[in-house]
Image (cartoon, rainbow, N blue to C red; front, side, top):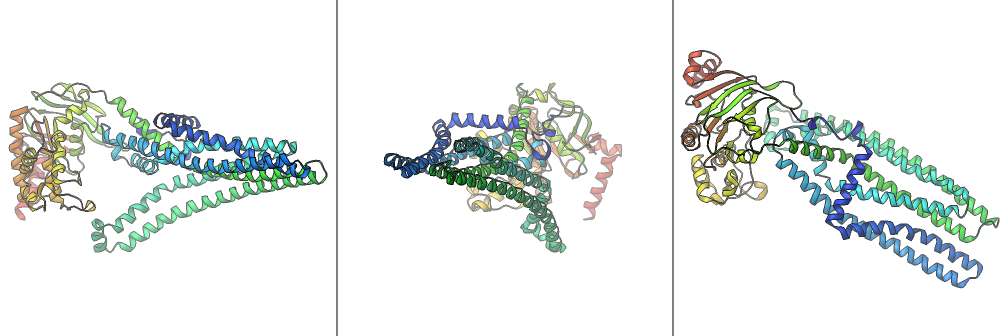
Length: 615
């Protein structure tokens, strides 16, 4: 049964993350920070907490100094002045140290642990489903580019706690001047509420317009890349691309502008109430002082506390805005972790791969549906691929050919049915062990921008620097002439962005074929449209070489060779031909048997043969 993790999220409406999950993650991140950098973590926490008494000390010291001056108490005046200066210096120093420590610890945990953890999950999960879903990739992009912000949100939450603690202490200090001043607590809280509400509106707008933003970025890339620029110019579609890009961007800008304006009005209202409330409080204390009900020190304390309160509220608002903004990353991050954990829990195969195939690979009523779709990419496939056989898989585009070889490679698991290797269920085989006995050149081959020899050697990682094997693989892929034309031969750097050489599509495909030829004793050898980017002479030469290689492997390990192709003329020498149509196995047999059957294979073969003869 397919995992449900792909269809679940850690977020609720508008991306809101449950508070308990957020708190649990922050606790986890703090514990991680404490383990990884205990001294820096303890210092950061201490600095944040010490800011509370330091700020309070300024107000108390100034009251003592002013009252000492007005009463003629010289010692009190000097002591209060010195203490106020020391407290002020302490707050400035602590603020600077605190910011530096938070940045350092945030980068350390965010970039080292979270960023690398995400990369590890993406690269090491057994299957490919997560790499072929836009919802997964959207979350990866969101989290990957802002991993540090997730850790920053944890420190922001701790800093907000100390800000609120400071607000409470300062308000209690005002209460010593007049109990009525305690009523200013709601006025201090209102900007915090207004900011949180406004930030949620902005985040909701960003979520609602995310799809339009993706469309806009895609259209912008289409219009600014050389690969698509040729067709756009020939078609005269440049203005249309710009128009659609502008329309999509307009939806994004308008939606987010409205949300930000509403948020700005909310924040303005919150700060207006705060200002009026504390203005009234200052007027009250001034009136009491004028009537002799308070000391000048009380008035100075109130003014100092009012300034500190404004700064604390502003600081808390700024930090809350950052934390709330970062919290939209927590949902995708938790979702990615949940998915990775779910996939690893399903990776149960521990059986070793056989040394050689004796029976072969059997499909029994195998069906598969891609996540997010309803149509079966494979529907009830039942067939045996005999050990040592060359299997050709043919069919029109979208018939399920590539899906079949991806199931063989354990990139996907069947939704129904089973695949067995010499009688052992493929899911029970250790994935790494099975893939170590698999060689493959896929239709959507990789373009690895490294030294050419390593690009080929990646096909058998333990022998990545074995020049003898690399030379053999290059020969098998008919790529000797390609290497001869490279400026530094096997040591040529590939990839223009790295200052290297860029290859043509056909040259990249030959490189992929060479990579697939590195392993000497695979049990499964897959060639998925291996010559789609090659000319006819190269295609025929390569197919002949790989047919010979398949026979050699069959003798050595009983390997099954699977060739996927839409060119029927190249697969006529296969031992068994599978004809797929809309995910179903409609015909199977040898070339001669299928021609005699007069079915779909015979029709398509005849059409292609006639077309080639005419050309």
